[in-house]
Image 1 (cartoon, helix red, strand yellow):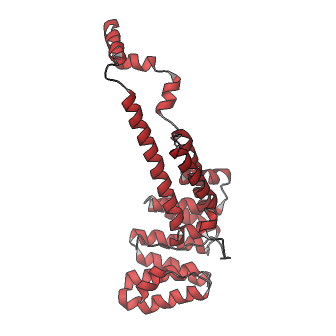
Image 2: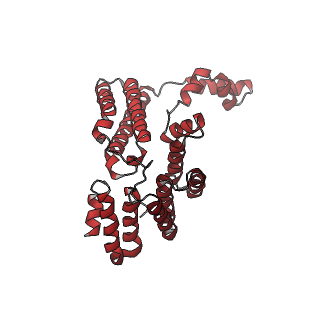
Image 3: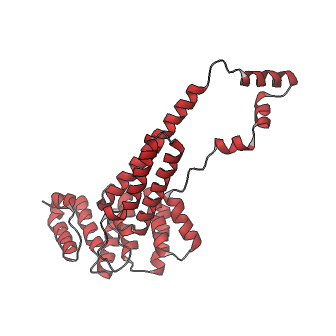
Length: 275
């Protein structure tokens, strides 16, 4: 259950949205450009372009949170994994080439240590004193913004940004910090007691903790307060399959069929489990 794809809407109006392929079109173009630069051995430029692609993928995910938690966004996640792997490969190759450029006859470091020892200064202290500011910057390069950092900036910019705060709670859940996630969700529910998104996310957190009774209570509240919430019905179907097994299959199927009537797209994996 912990690895199941949970649905959690962000608002009462669940409208039709563009295809994922359309949403990631800009990121796909950036990846193609980065690939071309990599082929031309322009490593630094390729890495920079790949990082632009990562930022674009993060933007798409942040702006479409209600879909990001579903299997529909597998394409985006695959692209992110590919880009990160490409960056790692380029950096590794570059490091290996740099290592090859260092010859075994280079005795400059040994000479520095010898002079330091003769002057009575410890080698480590001498090396630290001689290290230039530019070298220090190079030793700890900036790694760019992560998804969590991007969301945190949104919250810092506007602490009342409900959607960003909900996304941050979801990040806590993904990181396994369930207590922080639940505390954040309770704060959100204090603002919007019947919010479908917060209730669905709460159910997801409780399920990951293994507290299926609490997860069912949260989903039940979501269904009662948001009768047309396709996410709540679909999540309840998943929960019934886990907690009640074959005995709960009929009820789970009814929940799924209700979600379909209210506009949920087909979930092939769930349909297979309901057969």
